[in-house]
Image (cartoon, rainbow, N blue to C red; front, side, top):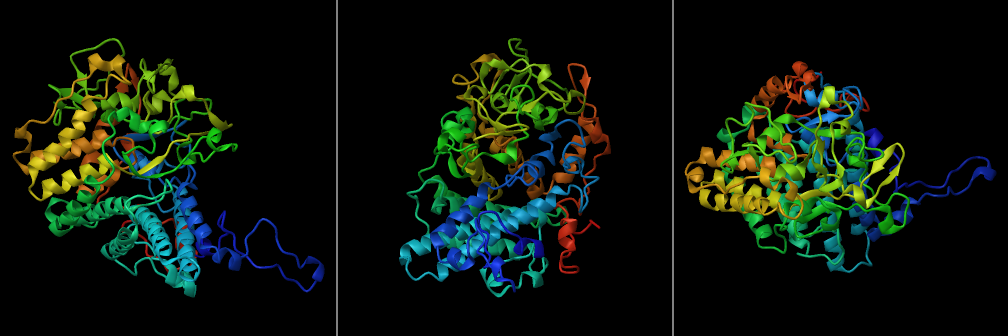
Amino acid sequence: MKAIYKAICAGLIVCGTLTSCDDFIDVTPKGVINEELAMSQPEEMVTAAYAKLGDDWYTYPFNLWPYGDVSSDDAMKGGSGTTDTNYHPVEVWSSLTASTPDHMDELWYHFYCSISRCNRALVSLANDAAMDATTKAIREGEVRFLRAHFYFKLVQMWNQVPWIDEEVYSVHSEEQTRNDEFTHEELMQKIVADFKAAYDVLPVQQADGGRANKIAAAAYLAKCYLTMAWGNGYEDNTGINHINKDYMQKVLEYTAVVQNSQYGYLEDFGDIFLPEYKNSKESIFAVQHSNYEDDNTRFGRANWSNMLNGCWGIWSCGWDFHKPTQNLVNAFKTKDGLPMFDDYNKVTDYPINGIPTDQKWDPRLFHTVGMPTFPYKYESEFTMTTDNSRTPNTYGYYTSLKEVPQRSNGEAYDYPWQAFPMNDYVLRYTDVMLMRAEALIETGQLNEAKDIINTIRERAKNSIAKHINYAADQCDIALYPDTYFKDVDTARKCLRWERRLELAMENGRYFDLRRWGIASVVLNAFFETEKDVEYNGQTYAQYYKDAHYTPGKNEYFPLPYIQLYYVPGLYTQNKGYN
């Protein structure tokens, strides 16, 4: 923790006047903010806490795309090969250690820099006597929301982490704070307490876009309770035999608040992932990003976490990371408009533009996965070919679509990096409604869950003509009949399938598998089939032959090696890791 709290964090550098026995070097440093001055400006401190939401980079992406997708059956790392970046151990699990990938240390560090800003803002607010009580309460609620958001990410990654709040900060006891002081459940309850404090004081709507509001707090509370409802994440204490029905009721309580709010389903699925719709009614809370043309700066407020993930040869700096798997493509297959639950991966298949076959597909495939012969992000002048893959013998030919804008809108980049003005969704309406459907199923309310899921499928069915009319004869999607929701097991299968298709490549697949207690079964089966996959005669993904997921160990990522030795003996490593 020493590196975290003694580091100089960009945008909030606090230091005093340099002193020396020689008067001629006793000068006030320029370009920094005196701590006393900074702490006397609570509004600016709150803004600085918000600013950390998007202060990430591809080696420490706050959206967790390597840890939520590449670690799952939805995505491969991509790039020039397995040594390009240090994320390869995340996709095979068997070589994951406390020092590989070393990117984990950067992520830990920057999350705690973000929490430090939140704690400073809370202290600044508490000490301010000029701000009116209503505004102060709202700002405190926003900062507690932000702190809980960053802590939720930390616990998602590492299970037990040191809880550093404004009290710890005020007495400078960071280096005496252990990571095993609180259990997983106790840490989650602390996160819930922060979100609940935000929920209690925040308005339903904020005058300024991008600020947290009551509905966002309700959605996050639902996400927390859903996470806790299944167990602690380790497979021996997680799954259908460990469900906490009281927590599931909390999910229903808070998702009802969202359901009855100003948010709703955006009419066309494809619009959700275009910059011009990034703050639509679908977006409950998102990290705000912009194009340089929007704010007259060199780069804008670019999304640097996704900068490697553009398509090779389409973008000047498209480095071809975050590549969809064949297993994911196969999951979009339909028969009579319904998912092929048991048979979807028995035969490798893929659509070819202009050549329809008897095999039909869920329309969301064409909004999610870029494929050779099809327009890239709906634009025929940028039609993909097999040349648009950087290393097809390792990572195949598919590319990710949701996280990029349309190519015709131009580029914002500084070679060799590519910047995209795409918001990062933290909570979108459909995700929250699927949380609600999940809780409904686990509490025996199957018909209402069916209605939610079918509404989402209806939206997918109506998302063809506007953007993907070229694939209309390849699409077939139907609503689930009542028979699919007569028993919990089948309803649960429908819900889980729907989450995979609707939220594919949105950085959360692994966390779903872990929550349900099925990660080892799903991933080890995936490794066996994907290592022999091919596209049009090109075999790839053979590195999966060395992959294996070990339950009782791999559920959480290891605490970064460097963090363990800042204050030796202070932190306890997650079980199974050395």
